[in-house]
Image (cartoon, rainbow, N blue to C red; front, side, top):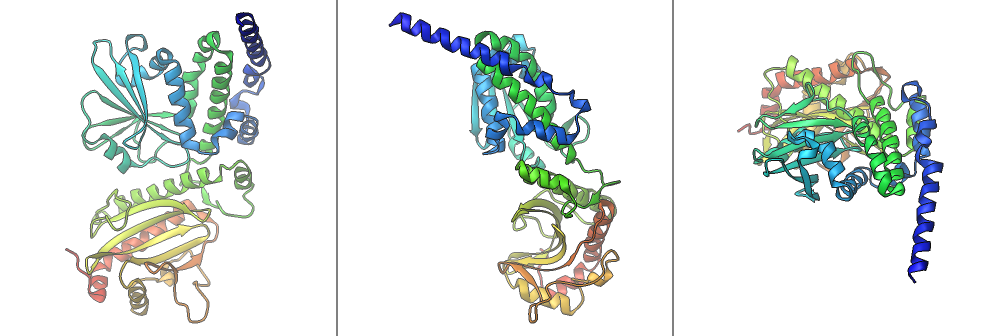
Length: 421
């Protein structure tokens, strides 16, 4: 029996070694990333088995893979992560790794050089976008030995410098996927000594996250020069992303950045309008505005919402929403949303597309007897179709709508008999 087991082990080792020869260095045969176009990166992703597996659940896959790596090779993992807890890699050790502890993606527990315990919380963002309110929530109530690391495919629009400084004094360090790949790559050789198969997996992972980073970079918004052409039929780039099931990732990221540009413009141009980071409209404070982004029915959206008052204790929100090729003005409320929308339209206090210089032509809906489109009964809106325009123009007209709304707020409150307390 021992002879059979030994022969079997030898066969497995020989197979792993041959796998290494055939596959483990295949990424070195690719052109240097600086010479590859983003289209080449997409082709490289198509060839990666780990990338294909990751599509089932993008963020969970990465968190699970990193958790597996840290548990299998804790000493090597400590060398990579120690810098974010103020330690040297050789002077600390990883005790345990938790997944989804209090909704946190990864929580890594260390014993430091002096014997004290330290904890590193890692929030992972691939398909979704970084959320400042979420980062603040996770850091609230943390101690002196708690540390925070945001691992994200794209750089958060709200980050100034190399880290995120919170109001409570805590700091989230930032790590992108390209840099993660650079830190993990040197681990391949020592891991190969114990398992060529694990080394192959890690090399494939490093290769594909570097390529994925390039795709993420393509979603970096430059408002000064970019156009809002994300849904134009001529946009072949989006068609390619759909094929690789990366379309939603791209669209969510560009719309999140557009929403943050709305926030910054309101901050500078409407200083009397208080802004909140709350993104749930029923929880936002009265008299405050906020921006948000998301994706519904395969199309991204960016929006500005202004809580002008309450009716029977329920918030009444007016706002601007850009989704796909539609520029919308809306009313949102749990109570009498349609009645309030009709009143505002009749009194010409809202839905004034004629005052927006970028648009010409038809206001929708156009069906006879239908004044508004709606999502359930709470969200009533009209829209015009967006022509291709610059991001700067889109930001300008969106914020101008909110500025006029803010100037007319008192008349709207009186017209709708709202409470502002």
